[in-house]
Length: 136
Image 1 (cartoon, one colour):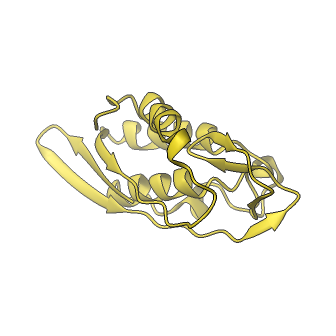
Image 2 (cartoon, helix red, strand yellow):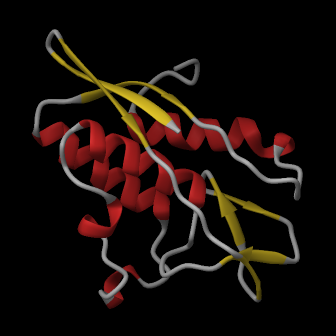
């Protein structure tokens, strides 16, 4: 996952990474989209590994640490939290520093389930929250 943010004539790039194990009994949420599958990802929030990587890249590019610092798994208020909502908060954090998102590029590594049927919705969710065109 890589992202670029800008402030006036300053461009910064960030790289985000996240891994969660599959477990039974949880919904699989990727890019803010529920994917039909018999397992979900283990995590404190909704465990949306794709959006977590995006958040980590944006926070890093802005010099704002990582998602664990902003949304610690020791705080009950983040239990089951929507990663889309957390991404909105990250956008606000970087916005307060004068940054806006220029582009985001995400690579999801998994053999199954197939996510290509959901790709457009994932992209639309991220673009909407970050206020960028889908082509970015």
